[in-house]
Length: 190
Image 1 (cartoon, rainbow, N blue to C red):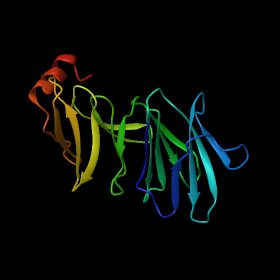
Image 2 (cartoon, rainbow, N blue to C red; image 1 turned 30 degrees about the vertical axis):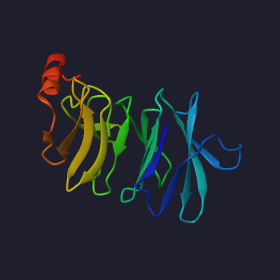
Image 3 (cartoon, helix red, strand yellow; image 1 turned 180 degrees about the vertical axis):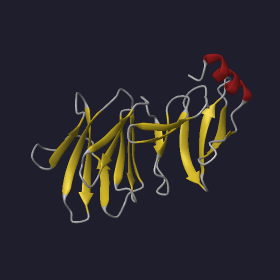
Image 4 (cartoon, rainbow, N blue to C red; image 1 turned 120 degrees about the vertical axis):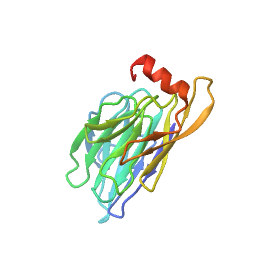
């Protein structure tokens, strides 16, 4: 299982818990909590602690991205993404890109960069701002960001791994092999 906590602010720390805490230990805030849930403990600067309880999808991907400047958190729980306002603890929106397999959220951007099996998305709250053409045959990931460019890896139709990049301003995608571009055209941008 992937358990990642990144981009932590000095105002709030987040930690994915291995199991549900004892009832009553923390204030619990439920976000579409159903079935098997992901528990995330938040600790504020004043040491106030509370747990977010997030309903999970069926994938082994759990990730927490805290955005310092916006005071928001993006929680990926089993492939389902939730945006939460850390000031109010209210759900801003749920990502409708199931499954979300990887995500990064650089502090300078007002949107997160997410990937499912084949495409990259820019999204904020429940709003999808942009969707790439097909980037990979399968198992796509976004893994770094610098100088307004996101970098990731995908696989061509021969299952050979390749690197790609996307300029967040122009939305230009570089490095996609021609066989993947052709597959995308044939499948109508699935």
